[in-house]
Length: 355
Image 1 (cartoon, one colour):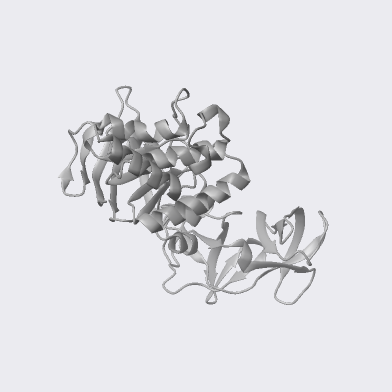
Image 2 (image 1 turned 90 degrees about the vertical axis):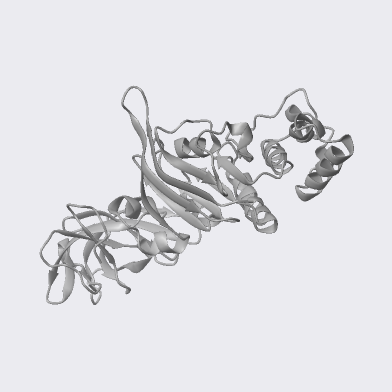
């Protein structure tokens, strides 16, 4: 396995479109590193540049100790797993797994040994004599992963590999990939637009937006302290509430009178937005102590919790996570209260974290 270094990566297409703009990444040996962002943010272009499938305009890429800027993909010793499984339809599972090893010219006995080894690891034994059309979507994805593993490359690059699976299979495959990566100690770079995948899989997450890296951190770091208003609005389901506030009497006061505890060092000379997670707020009975008047817009019943959307004062669509025992109908007059914890604060003009 190997670490991966990306320095000042820039990709401009002939029509002038900038897909990646000065991206720096440092991915450790044996790390499961996730690139997360919306469609068009540059994450797949960055991954393809690491693989050698896309030539960067400027910037350097190192895999291990090797500068690979001018190396073709076949010489970079990486394996890719795509959104589409790319299995050979006329070959049985056994031969799909063996194909890259045969292409390397390995002896038949070594090919057989490696195929049997990865088949045991991925629990593919009963599927070895089936062709792709005889496999379910989840089984095909396991075969695609196994075909990448059998090569024993220096790094694995995964481009939204679970997108085509249903919800239950995606959850199963997330568990399988995480377990597999830990067992092998493999360096993996994983691209997704799904924050649940990113939060559950990644040792660290890079959040990309418009070709730039907005934040890199552990799942807990990007959840607790998003580095920008974009990250705050992107991470979390439902996302962080962004409430315009002013500093008054040692407190943060939002529109409609919601009172928040300011973090240390909060500036007083600029327009501010406080970021408050839905679980740090509560919907109460109207007129309850320390609450401000609000109105329920809608309630999303999720079994183990209810997500309320409320309006209060001039602040619309505030999301609140509550237990299922707290029930209010749409249109009901209620109270809204901050239940504790210190919000994060952003500058409205720069959209960056200031406290």
